[in-house]
Amino acid sequence: MNKALMIGCAMFFGFQTVQCRASWKELLETRVHRGENEAVLPYRLMKPERVESDKRYPLVLFLHGAGERGNDNDRQLVHCAAEFAKDENRRKYPCFFVAPQCPAGKSWAELDWKQMKLITRDEPTEPLRLALDLVDKLAAELPVDPRRIYVTGLSMGGFGTWDAAARRPGFFAAAVPICGGGDLDRAAKLKDMPIWAFHGDADPVVPLAQTTTMIEAIRKAGGEPKMTIYPGVGHNSWADAYADPELSAWLFSKIKPVEKSE
Image (cartoon, rainbow, N blue to C red; front, side, top):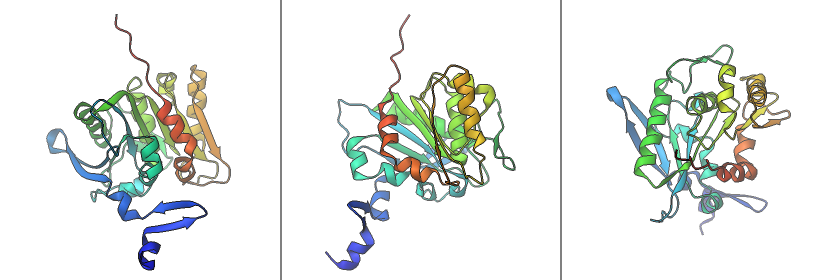
């Protein structure tokens, strides 16, 4: 193979191979979801390597951070997506991975940006509403296992993850909010949902207390959420979280119990 091509398409750290950016991005189809009142939500969709007719697959909704907002339908892939697109992860955990892009100037959840605190409204923000509608649409059109729909996000998307989980407490099989925060008054709604939250204790953007107080409130309500705090890590705690193979194993092991008919 041409030496320049090898350098451009693969980097070797010990025994680990990192795919070239162009190759893995091509795995994510470029799409647009159209909602009510002509509202649109760009998104990328990655399907399992092989979709077998007699199987249903998990669906992962990923909510990006504030820095990835826009309409290029590409920037939302800066974080997280590459981990899910790795060959070994696709083979071990085949799933539908959905990454919508929030428009500039908007957010997944209503936030007090000065204090990085969630503001609860009766209705979700338009981007989150569209994202949840998109999940419903894909779950109806694709061979998605309704017992294995997950939500995760970082920073602004971490707040969005907490908000989405609280708005649909019986819908998601698990939630993974990273360096975000939620509404303590709605913590009891999450006591039965598997949750694994992550945060760096040196985060200068979103206070660590946003995660710890939510976890404490859920535990007080009778839940058993997991929490990982990275010592000395700043705002980019998602880098450690999404690269941790234990997170993938934990996430895809969560299956909602079958609802009993009366």
